[in-house]
Amino acid sequence: MKNLLNKLHAKSKSDEQEPLLSVTETARGKIQSIIEGEEVDVQGLRVSIQGRTASAFEYGLGLETEPEVDDIVVEAQAFKVFVDPKSAENLKGATIDYVEDLNSSGFRIDNPNTPTWDNPKAQAIQALIDDRINPSVAAHGGHIDLLDVTDDSIYVHMGGGCQGCGMASVTLKHGIEAMVKESFPEIQNIIDTTDHASGTNPYYQSAKG
Image (cartoon, rainbow, N blue to C red; front, side, top):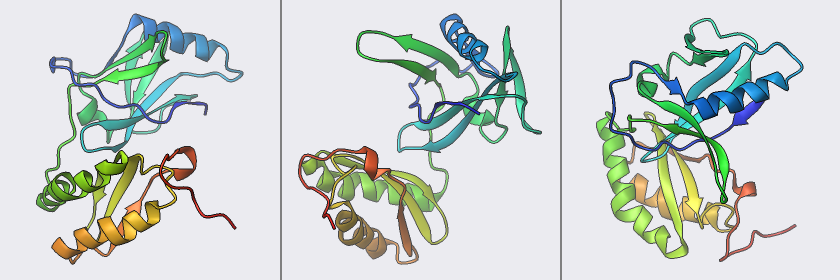
């Protein structure tokens, strides 16, 4: 179905009393107007956590004709919100809002939950990125976010000046990979999830041909 938003970054909020997420009146109106413009019978909006950075979740929002089997269904007056069950715990108390001003407009999720690593290896790799890797790429306006850690691989996102940089592969291979493997030899793969085609970079241009 129609994708409303690929990524939304969380904004912290202190109130953690809400049992599940809610939708503001402004967001409800915007979502309903989009639903009414669809040519198929849309039952609701599906929300899920698709990834994370070091400090925020990344969200997926999309219109659906029906919920998936295990989705948690939340009533939002004129439509329903289908909550991905794997994301539900980290969406408790969140609020879907729609913001429109002179600078930008779009959906935003205010979430009292912040991503933390409960895996000791992930915590140690995050510390390495914070203490050694990010200070080195910050000189070119870049930053590295740790998204996931498995037994022998880590997944990263390269942002700022690193996104779209013609030297990103060099930074990954000779910089990040070298430092990670030096401290964690069991990590064999550093996987870059960045969409470099959508980035711009003021320092280097990709080689052509």
